Image (cartoon, rainbow, N blue to C red; front, side, top):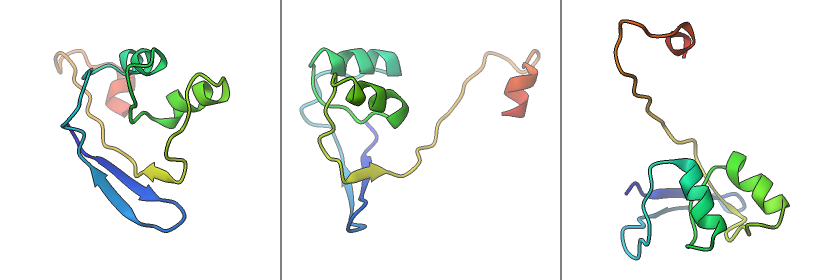
Length: 91
C-alpha cells in the first residue's frame, strides 16, 4: 500500500502514515471504497470530490479536519496505441 502523505494546514507539520497493518479491505476502484466506508467497514483516505458530498449529507465524518494531502499522481492504462481516442491523446 502507498503511504498516506498528510500535511497539517495549521502548523505545516507533515506526517507519513503507512496503513499496512490492520487493513480489513483493499480495493482498486474508488466507488467500491466509497461504498465500504459508507457501510462502516473502516476509515479511508478518499479524495474530496467523493468525501465532501457524503460529509455534507452526514453519511461520513471527517476525522482529521486540519490534515490534507498533497496532490497524488495517477496512472492510466489503455489497451493499445493503434486506436487511441482524441480525448486520451489530449490528456
